[in-house]
Structures are given as structure tokens and as C-alpha cells.
Image (cartoon, rainbow, N blue to C red):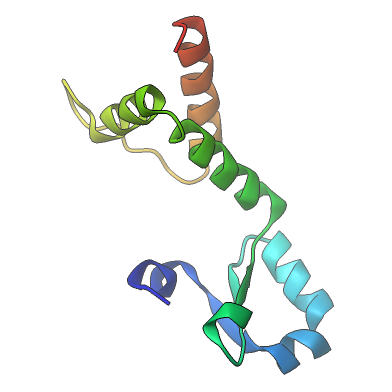
Amino acid sequence: MGILDEVLIERTVSRDEAASGFAELCDAAAAGEVVHVSGEAECDEVVLISTREWEIMRECLHLLGSRPNAERLWDALAGVGGESEHISAEELPAWLERWRLEAVSAGA
């Protein structure tokens, strides 16, 4: 696990713990908790997240998938040409949707 994982992951459980308490872990993930299930080898490890979190990640990956969109997103997040815009995790989906609509209307 990297430094970012250490910040984002809220709970780590073994595969055995996950198997015996899977429903509870799913409920925790659905409630927004990030759950890491450790395995015997690094390739056996998984992370449980809510569908909402997954959709946000997919949208971010999509937006970063083309260079023009990625540059616009990074510029907006960096506050190029003015003050930085601080966006909370709760505000991010709506902000991304507004940004996506602006990009579509601009022909990006």
C-alpha cells in the first residue's frame, strides 16, 4: 500500500474476517467507508468502496482520459488565473457534472 492508501483506507481486515463478516463490510462500504481486504500476496488484496465512490472515480478517470479535458480539469482545480476553488467531497460530483456540461458545450 502507498501513502495515499494509508490516508484513504479506513479499515483493513483479513480475507478470513471478510468472509465471515462480508455483509457488514458491504454495509460499511455502502455507507462510505473504504475497506481494505488483505490477502496472502499483494495481488490477492482488494478494496471495497460504495458504488457512488466508484462512479466518481470512473468519472474522474474519464475526464483525465483526454489531454484537453485533463488540462482543463487540472487548471480548474489549481485555480489558474485566480483564487483556488475549494471543493468538498460532497460537492465534487455536482462540480464535475457542471464542468462536464461546460466542456461538452465548448466542444471539448
